[in-house]
Image (cartoon, rainbow, N blue to C red; front, side, top):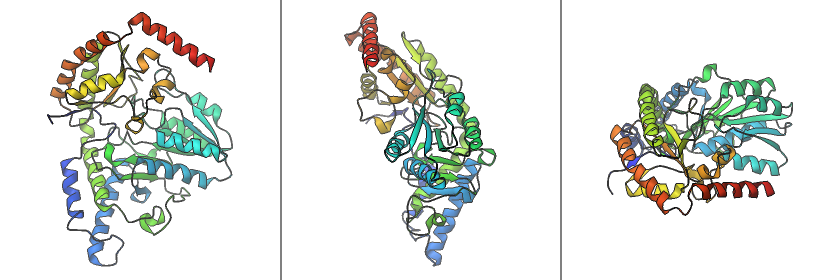
Length: 400
């Protein structure tokens, strides 16, 4: 296969060679169990302790506040269920309409178990309204769960303000920061966040490892019951090599925060070039966004057709979350934003990393105008017909 231009880093990232180098001895030479009493296992335990220090440093947290998990989904499930266990008498939960499937589907399950859930709306830019949050809060609210930044549009939510509102009502505040770690500075020491999830493969660590921040003093109840690992807060023999990799990736991410402005510069250059194509617009909040993410709508054509065309040039992008890519439904995020039908189906997410080069961006800008023009030439819908489809969609929605 020819060289790949990878612009799908919100789905997963390339394993950093330094991370792999740090992991390899723990897959071959140092295979002892970190819980063992002998020195062979003890040296592995020391390595885990260092990895915990590295992750805590990235988050601006204390080492004792870090629990290693298997992924972001486990971290989010653990955090939400721990929050409910901490206040079992409260039965009201709050989240947003644009969360990851691992949060939304869990909340739907909890509704069947007797909980009431408020799903906060977002506006056309994908922003949440803090007044809507405050109006939804009651003395019965156990938990507010909100992502730090949206995985599809990159829109950053006002988590500190939202957390302050949750705290005022005595509710736990959980944040899914999977897309933020390594892209924005984090300081849990001065934050109001109680629980926060990160995932290794979003910051150049391997898949299968993540971490959950649990503020000191929080009455935490584990999801996995068993041995004493993670101080009794997450049972199961540790994924040692993965945790070592996450620790090294966290250390590198902290160093590379200085390179984030360069990612933003390349992202902005990509956007400027793509917006030169007619009938194209950016989805999301252009001011409060992750520096590596852009979501662009190309009117009158299908996003899947664009992705397949890009793939022929070795260019990887996405039409939404990788975890829902098997669904034929349009993005639930873009639908919640109220985007018109003509934009909804032709929106593409490009997400950069520190490995993205100017040559990558140049190549996308070189091929994209031709792809869009060819697909529009093949499309059975001209602008007027597309407007008719929009009217039809609104009529169908109105009839429901």
